[in-house]
Structures are given as C-alpha cells and as structure tokens.
Image (cartoon, rainbow, N blue to C red; front, side, top):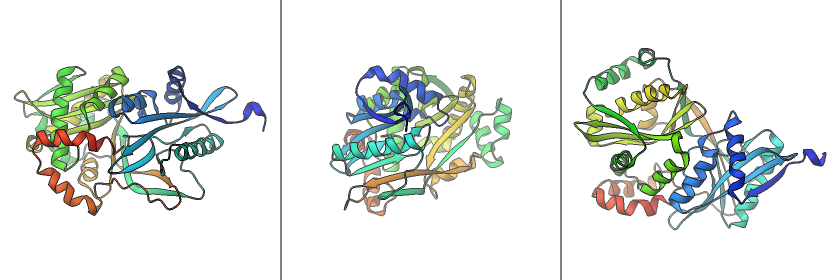
Length: 352
C-alpha cells in the first residue's frame, strides 16, 4: 500500500483535534450524537470516568473515529465502551481498512488499560476470533416526522391516536428550555421515574454536563399538570434527528396521559427546529417500552452490538432483565425517593 494511503490509528490527546472530529461525525451518514466530542466531554465531566479517542487517518485526513469510555465500577467491573452511557456508538469509518485498524487499536487500548472487555454499541461489527455478536438484544425505533400536526396524528395507529387526542385536550401545559428550572423539573421527574422502575438514577451533574457540552443541540421538554411537573425529557438533536434520551414520568403521568402529550409535543417542537426524523431510542424485545413504541407506529430495527473479552473473562452483566437482579430491583422500588436519589448516582456511575 502506498504510505500516503495507509491507515494510522492515533489516540487523541488534546482538545485541538475535537473540531475536526466533530466535522467528520456530522458529515458521516452514520454519525450519531454519541460519536461527537460533546458526548464524551459531557460524560467525562459528569461521571468522572475517563474517555479516549482513537482516530484513523489516511493521507492526513480523518477516515474513521472510535469514541471510548473506560468504565470502572466496584459492582460491575471494568470495560472499555463505545460509547459509554450511550445506546449507540461503535466504529464510525469510511471503509473496512479503517474499521479494522480502529478495532485493533481499541482492543490494544483495552489491554493497556487493564479492561477485560471491549463493548461496541453499533457500527460495523468486527469479525474474527474472540468477538461475540449480539443481534437480538435491542431494537431501535426511528421514523420520519410528518409535515404538520394533523399528518402526525394520522401517522399514529388509531388506539394510540385516541390517547394522544385525550392528552391534548387535558389542559396540561408544555414548556421547553435549558435553564435551571427546566433542569430541576426534569431531574425530579426522571429520578422518580427510574426509582419506580427499580433503577439507580444518574447524577444531576451528568445531565448538566451533557446539556452544557451540546449547547443548543440539547433541551428539556416538560409537561405540567396544574403547575406540577409530571413528565419531562432531555433530548439531543443531530443532523435533523431528535432523540428523546433521558425521559420519564411520575406516578400520575400514566393516568394523565402526560407521556403521550410529551412525545407528541416533542415531535411538534422538533419539526419547528427543522428536524425530519424522530429517534425513539432502543428497547429490549418483549418489554413494555418496546410495545409502547410500536403502539406509536414505530417499526423495530435490530441493533448490532459486539463484545470481546480477555481470555477466561466473562462479559459484564448490567442487564436489568437478568433474573439475578430482580430481588434488588424490587427492593429499590420500595426505597424512599430521597434515599434512592442519594444512593443511586454512585451506583449508576459504574453502569456505563
């Protein structure tokens, strides 16, 4: 191969490289928010977990990137993850040569950092010895945003459309913002929501750090009933797609149909921002979240993940559906909210 055409993986060590990486990610048709420097910077500041960049260059230009978070946890062990605290990531590259170079460099970095596993959440799946492919663990849900509210309602299946109409007529209010009050309302609602699910809540610092890193490409939409926040979602915007990423509702939200209003209002808001697609995120098959997204008319698409572990090591197990966690989940659901909010962040910091 001509030396000018060779691929050279390089670990990024300075912020000076970030504008070029961001430009590459935004120009790549398969780029996601989780490939951006903003995501890794927000995660690093918000969790204290160390992040790393590996890039592939050819002839002095970037032809691939691999964003990585070295997650360390007393409870869940260590792993090098692309991308940490994200539902996506993995290798983003122009061709197979760049992909292979990045994967090899990623595994070398995992060994250097003494991380017994490398997790790639999306992107081209590596071939070869030692790699485990998970093709049915999660599904993604993406569909176009319609041109107006009437068309958006008609795109929703009849039964769910009736629920949305009831929510629109229920007298609840919707606000969108990025300020301190938006963040307080979102965290209060989200923390209660995940406690009710039996899941430790992330820290307020993680949400704030991601919001600050993304700037105008992140905001919070909150639904209130008689002034009380009952549903709220922190969304990311990337290349014409809105992704409601951290969202939830209180106990009252289901009865009020607040989540129905929240997602429909977000579609309306995103359309106003010029978005053309709505990414409903990932869900596990045979779960309530999976069924809920299908009820909205979204068709599930399998997501491909890949894991490699060191010889003799088992992959990390952080799946809440694993039977061994069921007793812990039920106990967590019974915790007072103030206690769950205090105990949750140190645990969630290691989930990655």
